[in-house]
Image 1: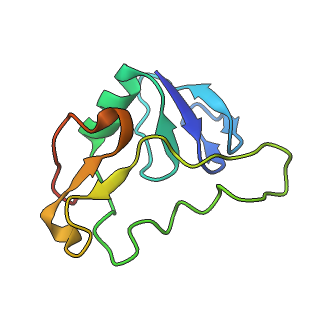
Image 2: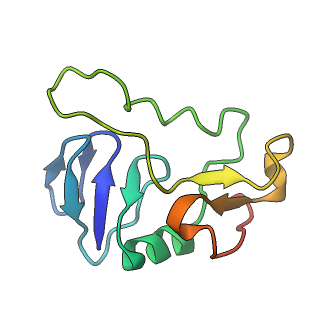
Length: 110
């Protein structure tokens, strides 16, 4: 499964992944919401199964902050797949994946 880090991450294997870097996720990887972008079908499925944890608060997009200038020379583009509310005026109704995961249906906030 391939992901792109949207922010700096430490994997459970002890590996440091700098934001903007594409990495192969270990089999026990739990993708953090708004911190990584799933790139292949298996990663998208895992991201959907994990669900939109923590997306129900008033600032559901606040974690998407690293797609700007950084201290490093690695650019961080916005995610191609992310959780978005079914109804932005009422995020309590659930979330769907934008991009390649939009055919997987909605998930309730977790």
